[in-house]
Length: 589
Ligand SMILES: Nc1ncnc2c1ncn2[C@@H]1O[C@H](COP(=O)(O)OP(=O)(O)O)[C@@H](O)[C@H]1O
Ligand SMILES: [Mg+2]
Image (cartoon, rainbow, N blue to C red; front, side, top):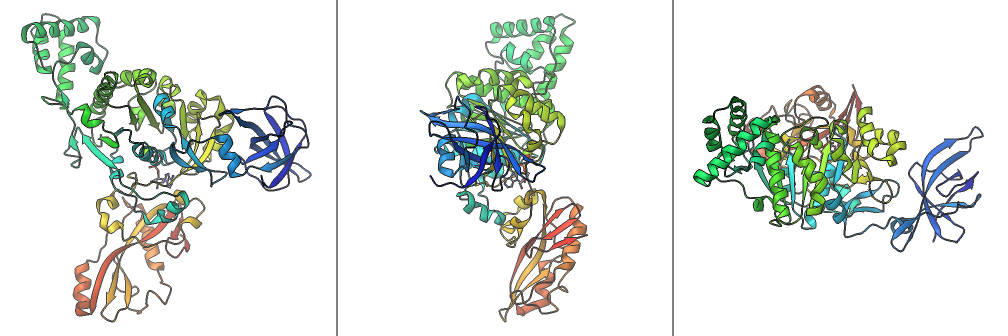
């Protein structure tokens, strides 16, 4: 094994820890190896760096161990003082960490980018997963990666999607900014089979209507759906109304139950009738319901798009769906599946009962037995039901900035106790995965399918999206994901003499065209456009509308115009900094 010597063990050692003097530069989380007394290479990880007054740098390391018969074993005796420490190479990392390469490919190790990280599918489904981080840290993006991998394994996925972000997975990721990343991560753009349902197809016209069958709802079903906990007298009314209906008619609807209870003589009835009316008026019950078998299909992501849907209705819908899925799994009517709940604090809040919280609790504690894997996503871990969180044995933690949320994350897992600072400082798209043998910092891979969490306007016009100008400097930015992208419209025209020019589609042709600057020969003076883009950055959406119409340019140039295409120029904005994404020039305000 050829590895780089980076240090020497210094001071006292224990079986779990040692410190070393560094000969070479090293970072936290870097993996190192040391030979133990038996001549085995033992893997360890740098936890902390310390500067000594004499100028030396000490790295404090945690021993991980070596792999023996399939499991990681920590040596029982401390490593010898003054042992030499080497940088761990990729082979030994892969051997000790022991990834199953048929698993779910999530990204690469932060410290060793050539090492791909895989999650185990069976473990995820049987032990649930939580994805926790502050808004904008990359939760939905990461879950998109997870969904792609699960679908590639032919397992069905159902996504509870309050923002309508996941339907875009049906398209391949054509973001030109990601070209480099495809090479780096070794993946290719790909669209997936997505079927979208929504209780409100007016707001979400691309979705199929989602309905639940209004037929023979059991008393327990009704009680579970009620927006408040019924009294025992009310429960009694529901039971006896349904019993009477069964005896009289055999089959019944919500209307029948309301009618039956209305006819009863009891003071308790008004409240319950009121609650049943509320449920009915939500409009999610119908003669014919959506079949669970349509929702759960191998290799299909079913997106339950709840965009624009009232929170109570959202919770009711979630309650019904989760219950139907759970029942269908218990009866083996559908294959094992993965259920993803975005913005989970809305459905399973801490210290609060909602329409949907009880059934999700059941799935969290029992779903594993029935092949119903749960993925809980939240930006407010502190507000999510702790019991459910603690059932999620795998946790994918991205950047968390709120101290209370950090506590909720660290509360369940002693492993992350000392990682507060790391978690606060994770760059977008970087994650700490815990629940595997070793906690790992990873860089989440690029998406194969299109991420829907951004620039909705772009997604509306797929063809224009393809014409974003090729930026060169994006990845030279320090934390590229911290920048907001702005797309500035231009017309790219070609004249009959074969020359091509860019014309500013907001300010008109005066910019580059009058000076007759050819695109290929002279650097463009884009300073005016840059300034304008900056002024317009506060506008809603980040695709700026063209003010000059194509028609005007066509009319002006007449026969001289051979071709005209609308293209977008990319700018990056962060605070007071604006970067020309094509030329890579940083412009300060
Ligand atoms: N792994 C990643 N690689 C590249 N860009 C990412 C990654 N994760 C997140 N991003 C960027 O960050 C933005 C916010 O991510 P998103 O997943 O929507 O955040 P969240 O769901 O946590 O609010 C995305 O639109 C995307 O541009
Ligand atoms: Mg999100």
